[in-house]
Amino acid sequence: MEKITCFIKEDSWLARRAARQLGAPRAAIVWGRTIHLHGVGRQAFLASERWVRHEVCHIKQYRQYGIIRFVWLYLLEHWRRGYWQNRFEVAARRAEDDPGILEGVEIAG
Picture (cartoon, rainbow, N blue to C red):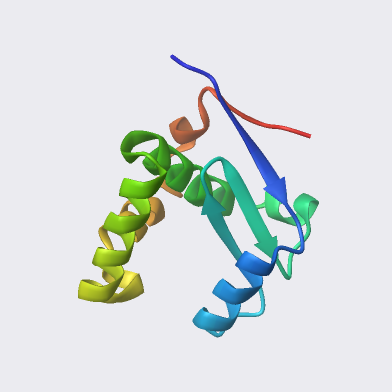
């Protein structure tokens, strides 16, 4: 199994925008191998295993499709089905209950 190293960026403008779009006080959004956070610090994020699993699932989706293709497919799903029915979000919510999703994953720093 190939090791995946991912990163965390706190106080991200990208995550702030996502939070605003969702009408939420906090958000995490993945770009490539980086989990961008807004309204939550690194330690609080890492303390939520379900949330970490959700975001790691997105990192694996990026790896599967590549950045450009994944973003394109994700946006198509979002436009067609909305956020909650987006197949990538559905898969990430399923991954929240899968401890195996974190195998081979290292969060740097």
